[in-house]
Length: 200
Image (cartoon, rainbow, N blue to C red):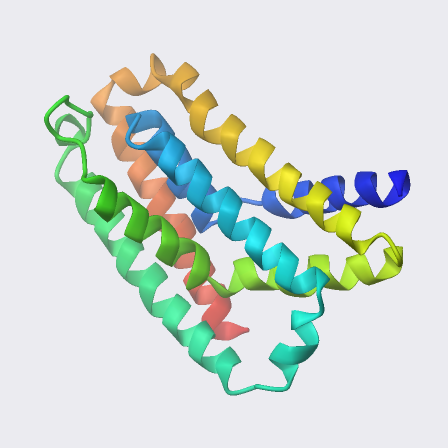
């Protein structure tokens, strides 16, 4: 069981560490200090649910409904393109407009909806959690549950560190120019992921 726990934690951590739409959004919210706990909770709980589906064999079920894969793929591409465009537009508005002000916080409903879409409409998240982690968990019979719990714990620890640790970069992002660079980078990441999905 100990081997399954370590394997689950570090397998999930290695997949989550890759730059993606979720990570970029969590970092941005952490820097803006907008509903960080809500964003971390949504990402961690969503990953835990998807990992649970993978560990319990949902990967085989998804192969039985191949029509769902193209739908997820192109829906994810469309959303990532739109969200990336919004980040580029924000950067074009100028750095001063991006520096968070006490009265410029987005509503928690809007932040939650964006976070949910970046998670559940993103085929990369499904691939990492349901397919890849689910497949690796099959190598740790009969301790798949321990593997899955450890993988979910890795997700929670990573998103917590990213979201709440982002505040330590606040001195850097006190400069409007830094926000422009961040928005451009986030937009570029979103579009790169969208292009990769479209070409896959």
